[in-house]
Image (cartoon, rainbow, N blue to C red; front, side, top):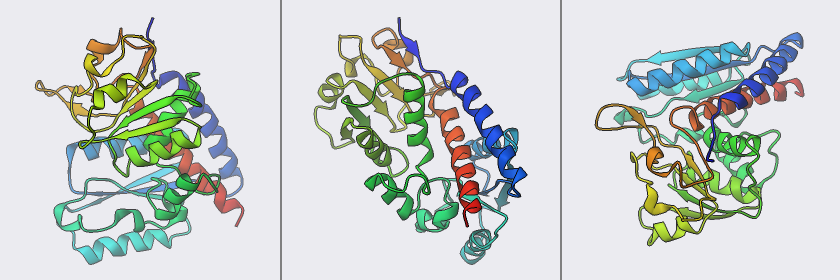
Length: 288
């Protein structure tokens, strides 16, 4: 029978741990505080930022959404980020993507200082993942971190497994490839120029799709052994406007050993990882 890799039981367990950690920090004079910069009124971004705020407050942390006009001037935008970088009361800052066109030229990963980059996009944080060093004081990108946590908490072996990742973004694909490698898996990073992609995925133990194409992964990507694990990072809408993933869940759920649902799989794990990074940033302040 296929194992449905739901985030719900893992979220319940980790939330209890985070509440305890947050209580400890507050008792020691540090109230974990996240600021989320939101530019414009992108409907998906509004939902995501509200979810992040709700979860942070649920564990006892503070979270403010800094809502900015879509036409905000570049200088003003950078000034706001600089003020947050220098605010000792704020422990974490994220810039909600996507940004409007006139800000797309910015290297977002370098705007928030490493110590507050709880999204894990800063070059120093990415290098920590690449080198597998200083993980305790640096931050792993939230979605990749959430995927590894989901698999490990679900008792899915990673070491010595073959992994196919579809999608090579800096947000998911590339850092996730490093994380899997750090956990002793052998990784093939696939993308739009990869030839014979189905032959690759059929030979792998774990398949991760993170390309944002609704129902891309169907039964033609899956082996006939029924022993693969499929992780769906996609958050898309189908022709009827309904939320769906990159994976055609109904077509392959009975052909694999384990699969994440959409919604309820990777999405909640991303928010959990953000909260974990925020509390780690707050704990780092204790040692200063």
